[in-house]
Length: 366
Ligand code: ATP
Ligand code: MG
Image (tube, rainbow, N blue to C red):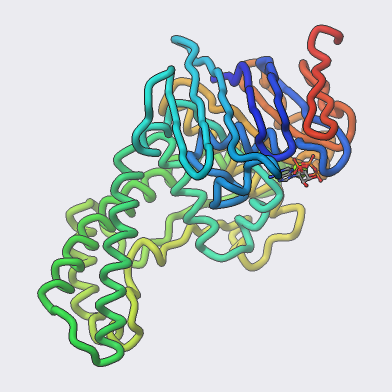
């Protein structure tokens, strides 16, 4: 999959841009605070259905303006498509190939991208919520059912926690209602944890091979899904969740929240047999995250037949020459859009100079 073009108006510090990208490596370069990450944020909106930097769309509107619009054109093996996003005075309109998109789920999965930004270095040492988010975002781009069921799960969790909170405060609550939420939660948790488990097994194979190459065979990375209620099949998981909710009910009422469920799960990462979450060095963390992101891309290609677009914000400058070369080897059939403060350190096919929200491409000059 390739991103062909990005148009944006009044998005962050961009007044108006019309940017073309080439297959292979594209670099956005320039000094700090010029609009490199802003462009990636705008592109990634269409892959994730929201910004990776803010929850509020209003923040993305250029200071002093009332709205923004953005549009991408992208191609896969079959055709070129467009996605557009307009936001004006609090109202949002999203279109795919000119047709209105009602729900965010209908936007996801068409333009697929893997984002790697400095915050993601926390994926190894940060809390389990970082790793759950990694899984949720990666899986949602290829499985609409997962996204739907996950949204449902969150709503059920909120309702269930509300009743448990009442129980904790000795206030009245409807026991039948609590049981109903519990049954639904077990049902969706079983499905969601099975999907996550399968996904982690799949990326584990890729991540191991990539880490092996990145470290010259010195480091073995193993990723495993850690569920608090495992099971061989989805049905078995559901039964196990129900059994656990029954035994944990008193504790949950005392705590005033759900102590069991996929919102407590994690992805264990180990390097050479020790837990990377506790013991990885800075360099190892960087390699692990890089391996995970590249594995996400490989897995996505295995599922869909095409690589997603790789968006790397500011994370390659710290890598040594050998690892950089490894990342970009075979970039012929993968597209990278990377940012850097240095002018074109990656022998790109398209270097774009960024200054004050304007973009000047060297395409054709090299
Ligand atoms: P760095 O190399 O430091 O990461 P960058 O080129 O990636 O820099 P960006 O994050 O893309 O920088 O852009 C930051 C600039 O955008 C800042 O000058 C900031 O003030 C400006 N900016 C952010 N939001 C808005 C907005 N809503 N309206 C106008 N300008 C904004
Ligand atoms: Mg930046």
